[in-house]
Length: 454
Image (cartoon, rainbow, N blue to C red; front, side, top):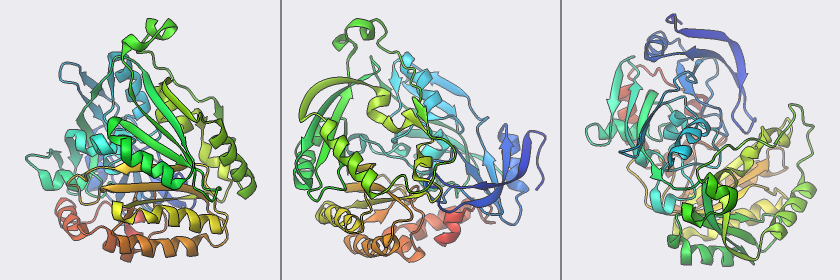
């Protein structure tokens, strides 16, 4: 592959998703600017190129065996417009870095997933969602414009008004329409770096879901953790909003916009298999449920504690050992809410317990053909990949998801079939037509794209 002086190749390297289940070897190409990206695209080899952010897609979405992966970490500019409450950033900027600029200036990102360790480009490509989807939609819904290198190696500017088809194909397009160079998006003004949080325990799954339906609209952010090891499906519901500065006291009042989170521990590189097992997961679930207050109102929590609790444990994915783990995330309409319970019951039947089990409500979908959220429920579970019978259980659940009009999240998937993809993303052909127009020679590809025949 021909590269410009500002693009540097490393040797072939084994790369995996966050779940560490299906690694493949690719050449990492570090790029410094738009010229380096266009040169890499125009000189793409037979196996193509793909932008890779911080590697937080759980499956094979940011892998491309035999191809080239573009490291955009040097595309790291941040231009904050405080008057307009918008920011323009390079695609390689992480939400962690961005928040350390935004929060002290009195702003927060419009949407954040459960980790700050994702790049802006990755957040758009996966169209990430958060605890506020029922109110604010996805990250891509807040993007005003973005600069992209298409499959011809041309730099184009996309926005939802003048180039809607290309814009929305790129939002949620998993990097397969082009390389995002930068983006401009709106922000949430805040006056403190704390969240006012209400917490309550639900006695069973029905209780948790009823509480969410009844009062979620009263809160900007809402999420439930569900105990997968307990037959009742009991859970802990946390909801909140940004706390005004005049609610603060003591040291927090003296520095209301202070923000300096850091990891408290790191999982070592080599963790033996078997440490995360049914016994340890059951014990964790029991302790986590018991430590939550039965009912607490107005607790002030730091942003990192509320939004990104797992970021306090660096490389937490290593805790599952060399076999890795699978995240299974479904979205189903309200009429198929029984699938939430069925999923938990089926996984419990094979002792596939999950410490990180997240239940949320989704609001209206955006126009992106491959965006995951749709009105209704989403459940995400993390289970060790080596659980006996897991593949069969997930295959059977897939059938129920298809029948219910649901879907799986591409950024978390590592095992879906091409048939399920086509059945659950009904606008796939529409997206493919736009993709083919933006990338007529098939330069952009990934292991996920090959697996799903995208």
